[in-house]
Length: 97
Image (cartoon, rainbow, N blue to C red; front, side, top):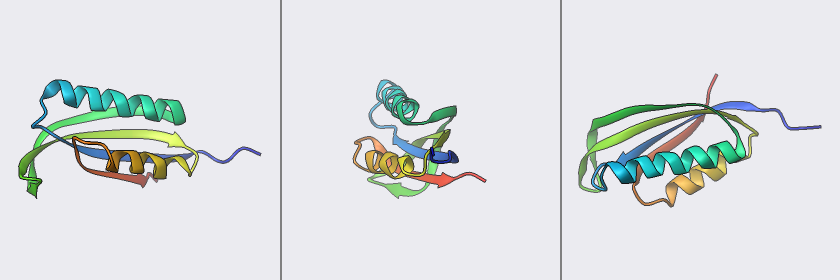
């Protein structure tokens, strides 16, 4: 019996210091990781926003929202990869209701 798919969303705040090419590369990289392990529903780029507080001496971040369906074990691995990737200031993966 296959595990049930659940709905998730992942938000990443990317560093703007690395430039637009690095931002696009990170979005593409994580889109591919999600596609390889889950069903990617949408990628919503919110763009550059001012942060509520400084993170690593940065006052702006580039926000991206991924909506996807996957087995419950994948989001933990996705979060682990986000936490060890340079250029990602903050990330969060949550279950969507």
